Figure 1 (cartoon, rainbow, N blue to C red):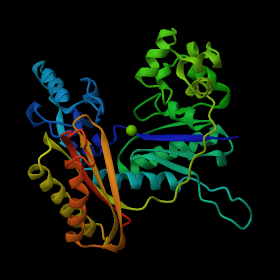
Figure 2 (figure 1 turned 90 degrees about the vertical axis):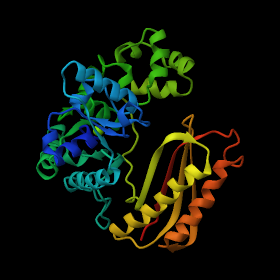
Figure 3 (figure 1 turned 180 degrees about the vertical axis):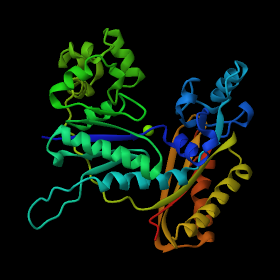
Length: 370
Ligand SMILES: [Mg+2]
């Protein structure tokens, strides 16, 4: 029997900020781009629950968030506290959470001689899947789930929501079921009942477009969707129809992918105050980021990098990354600056930018750190 869990931190970035500044407790908080008095660009990364009550969510444009905050203020409600994201700090907290989860897991040895490490798959900065099959029952798995939650509160002063089910799909939907601070257990014999009343949008992969297509067939809930044949779903959704047919039934056999710990990387990116295609405007950003990265590397105890990744987002949000791996590791700021500049120039002309689109965001990352 498979028992799979999904952990999702509650309003992660905002909760980390709240934890570090207790006077923010209970205030609406939006972490993300600088709103610059309503003229800012970029988006919200996370909004805590009070801010969500104003209609602010992740990916809300920062200007819109500012407007909603102003509206609330005019009604006599507290205005939103805007905090620029400190992504590196969140990465550190994330690593601690992941290691708490890991410490509660047990590997299943393949045979007497080989020790296997526990199955855990981190899918984003604040989310992971892990395999609790070793627990042997959903009851035992629930106990482990609540121990993990308790540990996260005690050690990190943050809350997590966990969903447990017979596969990743059900675990993921279950972790979304009761947020924040939830623990939802869906054993195999309850899967169909649990899914029945939920909106089809709860199925990972069903976005606004698919929702619209399904709505035209009068499908709103998962129960509605289950009335359609596999053929019908395929004719409407294309190849994905078969997969959706199985997902509507809570079926999923995708494995928890155990990955080697990702090679360390450090990066920085910035949305420009105004879209631009001027070298004079853009180059200083790229150069400053390159310089900052060398500083961050030092603070983290790394001496060298080998791979450089440059990311450019155009005004129409098309995002392109180019990477370059050097023949030898280096820690030289000048080498990094030179390569990053060389990599950046093609984005100003036809080579990488045939449409002469203006640039909205630039970012530099160094990888293969030692
Ligand atoms: Mg989360």
